[in-house]
Length: 232
Image (cartoon, rainbow, N blue to C red; front, side, top):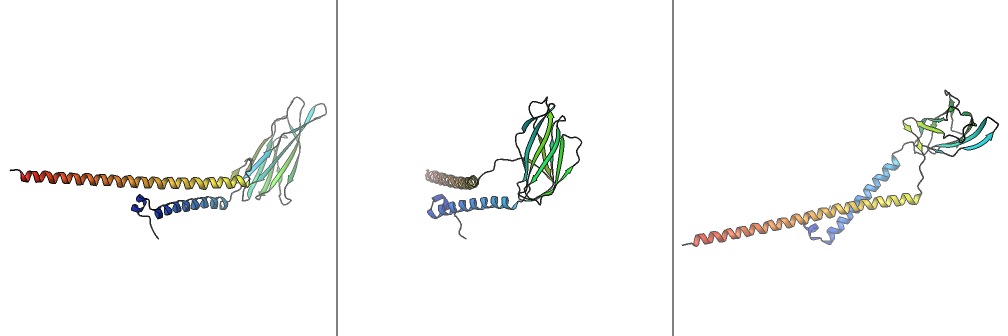
């Protein structure tokens, strides 16, 4: 395999510059390839949830009715085990019914016992990648509460904690992001190479100056020696 000699780099020969750019591009491609490979092979579950504003209705003299809608999903690329969705409202709220609508019929679940009528726990043995479940929670609340309180939702699985769903990026944004990453890697590689070349050139110039100074000192010493030898 051919190598880039210091003299060719310092003199800026065309073939050396071609190898420099080729090396930088190859380094960038290898780096971005490693990142993409890691993202696609590193399989992990990701539990996300989405909550919607409560729908409020007037019902009877003493109570109001609210309906809370929410959705959970395994947005990762590996199954999530022992998933638990925990719903909680203020103690004055009464959860009358929880309607559960799995995306697939194969999704199984069970309802766990809770200490109060304002809390519900739903357990899923497993959620595969892409599995999602929608919930509609019917609640009775006191007339004294003018606005419905926010529903507290906790989502957990074996070794993971769920989080609010982030905005999904489209394919164009993903491609643009990857190209930007690739471009930054190329720029960093080129800057490193330019810095290396600059250092080598400065080092060569310093050596040349030092060699000239040494030659001049030797010449002056020789002249002084000759003068001393010729002195009557």
